[in-house]
Length: 494
Image (cartoon, rainbow, N blue to C red; front, side, top):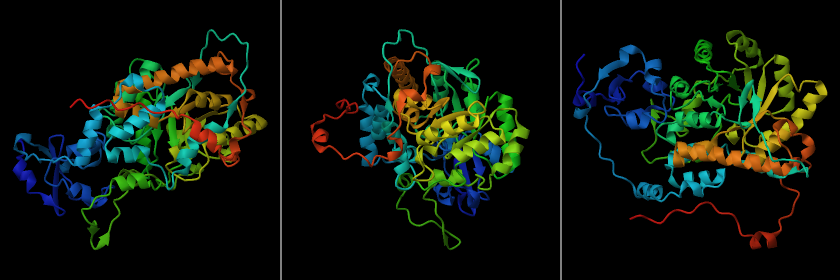
């Protein structure tokens, strides 16, 4: 088949006749325009043009092959004939690129919050808005982290802690440290290689990676990036079309995924105003057929369009019938539902509020954990299910607190995205190494040499449920205290 000419593609640039170029191939997306989850406007902006740069971070490379009818695949385009758009950099973008050149040395990052501080300064506004945003007033986002600060240690002394081993098992997989890389969407917003960067770092530190349904890389790309016997889990948003869901699950099992994490806290995606505001532009109201359409939620709206709000406990037997993988419910937020999960015969739960991105004022996972494990022990259920937590974990002390309360492991998401966005694979490697070093130090300081020694007697959780309201602020101490700071920018090389 002869290559298409760029001038020919450019003729098809209206809502009634819309072609776009992606990765050197032309596609007729006219009929798809009204169905596009992100709205018509973003496609029409690239009608008759090369949309690869916009398409790449948001969609896995096999998206068009999977979801656009083959009759709409028009063939390859001679890219030499495609008119290149001259993009003038805004003053804001020029400043950002200068900050990228001044990024601190990697070894100046001493903790996970440092990576977030660097990423905030150098990421594109829209990417930062998507990664960092949470629901409504972002109370739950902050509480997820703050809750760990209300748990105090009761360390043992005079214990021989020369040799410390913090390896453990999660769903039958031995890992070197009790955390896993939890599923986070759209990795290429932060780094051109996307989620495979996390795959490689997870291998190096022998931790498990959970593959997101909404990754920027294709599922198979992420699986192919794994080495040897590296273990990966799959996170699933359940599609309204159960046949699609069945194919996704069974393909994951065939490829060697070792567990299925079904997200149960997202019948609709939360309203993330920081993300919405970062996507705002002044191109005018988007009107279709006389009706104003809301495309302001961008990626979130696109994601939520296919998630099934009808998912219920009645679906669990069906999932058990289509796969032999362990089934874990991700996003459980109350003790009663953990008990129902045990009785439904699933193998695990993740106590999680979606990183504060769904229901604002949902309680922190660690607070729910502190209520859950005593109740499971009362019922004799503690060995019938594995309990994980995610949200707000930034230090190895957080990991240790969760394990003392009875969690098998913790999921960490955003910090690794920030490390990847700021420094690529080297950043994620350092972030994981920092956690490993903190883990060794704090296991020694608490007086434990292995994970199986961690137990509730090592904690004081009496302040956990107070939500920070019980202690008056000491302003003298506040103003006298010399606060910790994040790494500084380097001076300009110009």
